[in-house]
Image 1 (cartoon, rainbow, N blue to C red):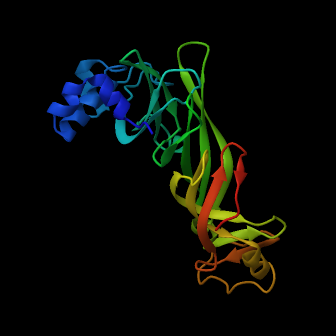
Image 2: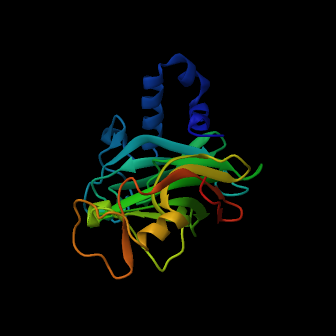
Length: 271
């Protein structure tokens, strides 16, 4: 499936085959940066003053392109897109200090179609949905007050009223690791299992329109113990558990491989 290779092809075969990988990457970065940055402001993989950066005001907002980049036909009956992870000092911690820059390949040339602050694309896979469209599915994560909030997000692309392209999240699964907040993971006993704590290593799944990843979770057996006699209390805890919650200390959770059917938005039982 396409990643950034289609963009390199657009830059010309001579660039790909005559230059070292490092030089080819530098040239590709410069070509991308030039779509929203004056040449004098391009320093390696960074634009020191990105034109039209959202909410920049009078600030000089730098944008550093990272190596995470994913290409595909993310809008049906449209041109291929390239989505590039970036960092910017103009973004707050709430937006994970960056976002995604979106480019479009039109008749062999690359055009910039928008910044998406907060839409970080650093752990993603491109999943074919047929001949005319692909899906971009990513693991997400954000820490707040000791809680690591994660999830599996299908990135939904759509054109706005102008030439820009926006991205929205569709979450078929979410996870919360509370170790940093209370000293261990917890379950709320009135909820139904499974409850997910951590997600990692996303990959294209074993069947059409599926993704798979590793997960730590609490299944029915873990719930039964935690909400019954209880696991041994962790050695170090913070604060007091809410009524109806129970500890799941490190090593007491289950681990397995999880598959999501994107077409049905169905999370299959962990294996």
